[in-house]
Image (cartoon, protein in one colour):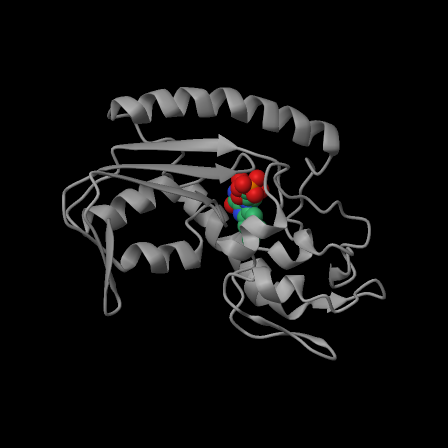
Length: 227
Ligand SMILES: Cc1cc2nc3c(=O)[nH]c(=O)nc-3n(C[C@H](O)[C@H](O)[C@H](O)COP(=O)(O)O)c2cc1C
């Protein structure tokens, strides 16, 4: 059970799970904001699954640190390797065959994870908590946000028909569609607008013309709108 009390979220459940993607070897900003609002009322068993493209870095260790500041801990933390969707970073696995193989492997791992969670077992946290991983995370984030300035590079091509899908699915409500499509300044770089556009009408600068648009095959657009 969850109660909204002002800006806080009071959580009374005995099992709590966080499932989110890795961004720049860390927890995405929007997920951090959400977790910071939570007050755990019943010392739950807390598990997390971080999806990534093979470079999980210190993500789950950072989550454990945030939870410890709330007098909780991450009881089990899993890394699930999925197809890459970060077109801004060099992504050599952006290939349908490799995507298919990763999705097949992920199903096997999900089976294992669900058994552990059902038992509420304590497990070692997966990932790497080294200085090198932190440096890689900070550097790639710095390049994407401060040097390449990805959030300023979104544009529409001639295929855009102003259907408004990007506006509906943006988790930060950062996109407005009327005569034009306008991105505001509150972008987490999730790239949902790019990957989910039904017309393939969104580009990131001139680097994405030939890039594959990817989203998990079991997710449909309504799941994204309703979230
Ligand atoms: C902005 C951004 C940054 C990312 N940074 C990383 C990263 O540091 N390490 C990594 O392995 N994957 C990274 N990814 C890839 C995603 O974590 C991965 O593709 C995603 O978890 C796929 O999950 P899904 O299939 O559930 O959409 C990044 C993706 C984006 C959009």
